[in-house]
Image (cartoon, one colour):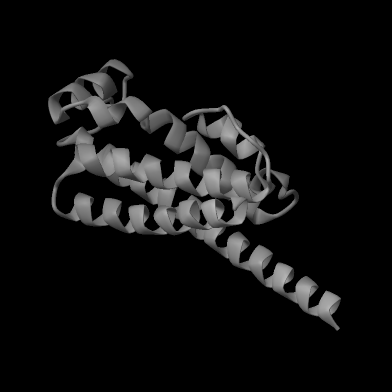
Length: 161
């Protein structure tokens, strides 16, 4: 059962990151930002569920990440990439975005100083930045997911001999 739930989270993460990219292209930046963060949360929940651990981190991406096999990656380029992506995502995403209008999200980001040094539409800029970081994390997670699945299939094949 847990494996099926994990697989659902994983597939949803892959779909949501594509959705976020399309929303960005269409100029729906506030919804793209929410969707980018949701994609990451789904991916982390997939890994956490696959590990068989229960979680109560709600929407705290750092705490979710720490309970996954992704956090166990050490001395690889991927570890630094995941860490950097999470820094960006945590700076730009808030689960409360799902309840904010575009105007409220702009005010939230402005209040957090996320408009500084940006000429033009800072919501567009931050939405694209968030999407790039989320996409990076999803790509690394997708690769790791496939490796885990492949090693599980190989282990099951060895046991059935």
